[in-house]
Image (cartoon, rainbow, N blue to C red; front, side, top):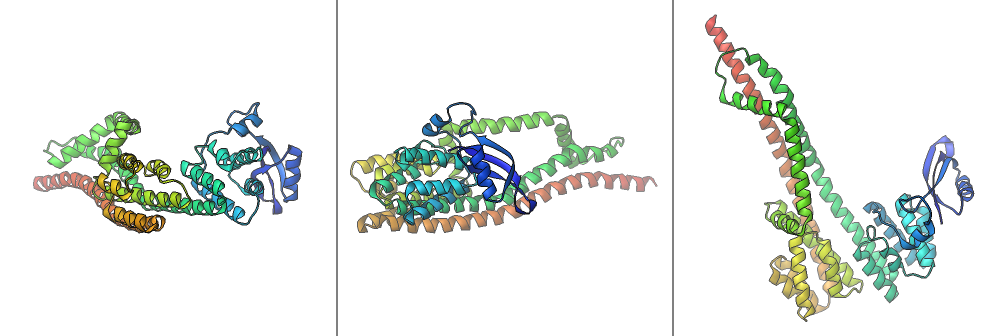
Length: 412
C-alpha cells in the first residue's frame, strides 16, 4: 500500500506533518481529515530511491537503507507486545505500519507486511533488508517461527536491542563532553597561534633585544601555522582518510584492533564492551533455540573487534570437532577467566544462558564504571592541557614585555 507524506494544519491551527498509508491520495486526505488534520501538501513517497515505475516489484524485492536504532528498538518492542497479545502477524504488522512515525521504517515494514501476506515467513521478508535487520534478528525470528514461540523470541530480542541501545548511549553520553573539550581546545590553540600571537608579537618586531627562547619558539609556531594553515589542514585530513581506509582493510583492521586493546585504560574498556556484547548476544541466541555453531557465526560479527573475532572463529572449529565451548575460548587467551569459568559451569549444569547473562550484566556494570572513571580523568586532563597551552602563550608574551619595561627603566 502506498505511503504519503503530508504537511497541513492540525487542531488549534498547529502545523502538522508526517506520513500516512492509504490506497490513494483521496483516501489519504480522508484519513487525515478523520484525524483532524487538513493537508496543504500531500505527495506519495516512493519505497525506493528511484521514484519511477516498478514500485510493486520493489516492494517484493526489498531495498536498502538503515534506520535509527532507537526507532527499530521501539518497533521490535511494539511487535513483541502485539504478538504476545495473540494478534495475528499480518494485523500486528499493519498496526506497526500505521503507528510508526519514521518514514523509512514505515516503508520497510509496509514491504515486509506485503511479503508476509504473499506467503513468505517473517524471517524471509526481513532478510530482504540486511541494513536494517541484523543476522541476530533473522536467526532468532526464524527459530521463533519454527518453534511457535515468536512472541517469546521477539520479547527476548526487544530486551537485547534495548540493552545494546542503552550501552551505546552510555558510551556516547560519557564521551560527548571530553570530545567537546578536545575540539574546543584545538580551536582555541589554533586561534591563539594563527591570529592572537602574530598581532601581539608585532610589538617586539621593532626592538633589537634578544627575545627569550620560549617567545622565539611560540613565534615560529605561530608563523608556521598562519602561513601553512592549508598544509596543516590537508595533512590532518589526509591522515584521517588514510586511517579510515587502512582500518577498513582486513590487515589494517587487525592491526588497529590489536593496538587498541593495548592502550592503557581504553583497551581494557574496549575489551569489556566486546565481552559484554559476546555474552549477551550468545545468551540471547542460545536461549531462543539457535544452535551453538550458528550462534557463534553471528556473535563473531557483533563483538566488533578483529582480534576477538579471530579467536571466536578458531574456537568454533574446535567446538565443531566436539570440544566444549569454554575450552577453546580459554585457550585463545582473549577471554577473561571469569567468562570461561562461568561458561564451563553453565555447560555442566545446563544453565549456559543464565551464566552468560550473569557475565554480561557484570561486564555492563564494569563498563559503566570504566566510562565514568575515564570521563573523570579526561575532563581535568583536557582542562590542564588547555590551561598549559594558554599559560605558555601568555608567558611567551609577558617575558619580553617585562624585558622592555626593565630596559625602559634602566634608560630612564
